[in-house]
Image 1: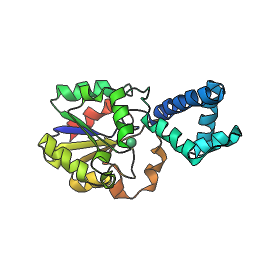
Image 2: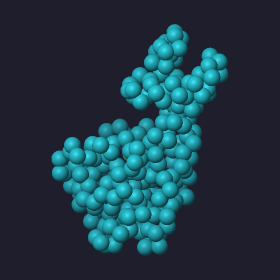
Image 3: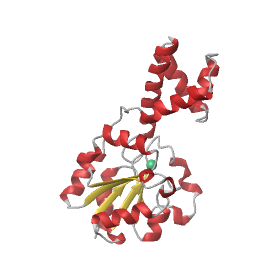
Length: 228
Ligand SMILES: [Mg+2]
């Protein structure tokens, strides 16, 4: 019987693309105030530069505008991006799913990788504390404990006082979300988000990396839980 469902954050509960847009909006405001370049123009340029390649986006923006810059200027913008308070919200299917799980008396948690300050700002923006019983930001345990390291799953098991077989993990990234959970005996569920950054990796990975179940919407999660 399932007693706890743990979710990944990015592209599982919130859209990574929406976060990127929010970050670029923040950067566009800064560039606008420093260089008097139209904010909408800067935002559109950031998006198209990012779509060409996600590497060195801010360097390439300055190059495009023929603005001279130091490494420090880039690091400052990266810090601004990572530490901004994002304008993001849950995917529409999240709250209904959480309500269903609550009615089944199933505990809910989050395990998320990423820079601690960035992830905490995202969690604050969506008021995650109101909806989740336990939240682990793996970066706060140490960089070496980001997924696929099993430590966060072991910690969550202790916090919920359940066995691995009573746990479900829902994530979007086959590179790191499921391999440890599968080995531990946690039931794994891949959520395929339209626009998800890791969506097209699914076919490239070996069996042990893949989730046991696949869904396109969290509305289908309780159906899977009832069948387990
Ligand atoms: Mg993710």
